[in-house]
Length: 439
Image (cartoon, rainbow, N blue to C red):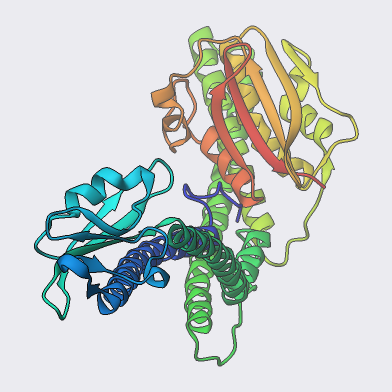
């Protein structure tokens, strides 16, 4: 099994952490708004209470002086307190200079009124309350209270809420990361174990034990699935081996007879051409059968793994025509984790196809991912269209005189070792990439 690219959106753990942080941030914002609204309402109520108490204190100390004038003791006339008579004339106290027009507007009110007076950055709240002294003198008391101290409290509360909200988001994200890491640790271990197994490590299982949690149940389900896959692979290997053995004997007879026929000097030219065609076809079929047998043996549990120099595998794949139109740029010390025969059969069909359609072929190698090498086969042939790059790997599909088994076998051999064979764009025209494990 090979590890693929990460799914779009990141890992489940990352998504969980981000979602937790987002939800916590949303909750923090909502709570901050609610706190500010409640605090604003409480501030307004407190201001009104303070203004009402100050006004009542002034009213309670007011009396009627000579000529029916309203009199208020000096000790009750705090800053911002003004008392007006029934005609709206100032009877006691001094209105703030910046609010004189507001006080004048409220001096003749016949009901309790409360207004907010903007003064640049320093706002105030003004309350006007009409009253009548015990002796019957009427008047209006106007008091004011600055909003700045209350606004400082609101701003401080906002900063505290923002800081607490940010801390909540960080703590929630850290907690979500820690909890998800602990909860998903068995899944990570299972993923790593599965990633390390090849497609033919048929005896390996997760073996979660008798646990009753969801992960143990998942492990048992995957073990049953792996057992069914292993049985299918073993059945396919047996069928492949049996078919190859059954076909090899009659094919050898056909090959021998075609070769003997070609040795006959009296064979007519037309018959010789047909015999050569038969001999070529049987050789291609024989190579395909040998590949199937090698693949079946390599996939069995008893077959020992082998390795070889990549250069040797390329040389065997090229055969007696090595060097004819083929340029090899490979590190002589580079080894692949496949027997030389199987590695050559993974490379052979690709090289044969490239030589058949191109005048120049270049073979090179480059690191692919840890433990694997990518063998690049570039050619200057007509190329393969994007829509046909997967079709050429379908068994039976061919543009030449073969059986259409070469490239499918090449991909199958590479995949059996955890690699891959793909067609892509290259510096010349067509590039086929054969990914093989390194020793």
